Image (cartoon, rainbow, N blue to C red):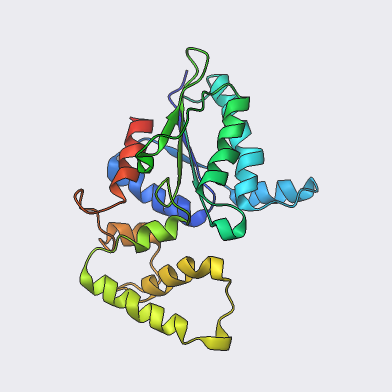
Length: 233
């Protein structure tokens, strides 16, 4: 069996950031879906109106689990956003959505254990079928998304000052503000990254440029990178 390691993510920003982490950690991992837009088009052509999380849950993850059971891939992990309880989602509901599908495919779903922020790795009931890792952004225990994890881990006081100015600018938009409240974290991070030495850099490039804190003693990104290593080592 070819040693093929697959990481499933929701969107392009997740893919970009995780790709940089994978390179930094020197992990041999392929991030999928490689063409999320084509998956969305497939879903739409089938008459299914779905969000990206539903594309992953309905199409990409079941397909990957089938490949896993056939030993076409050796390692599998899933990263999704918790989003917010106000949207009808949140950490607990998102976990229930994913674990229900894993359970249907024979995986053992234990009761949540503390601390929650370590991610999870689920074992299969049958020996020989690889485990599946799950991380729900931002911290595998709180509501939110990737952007919240990054905004909570700025690398130095100068970056925090920039974010404060970004918040002021956003608050002063008034009627010019067109994005939804649920996208506030995305707007804050995008504004912050627009004001870097290379304006408009991606989250992955910003990680490489030390915009975010990676100190093992202070950064809450570290549990995420530790989980990635555990899944794919």
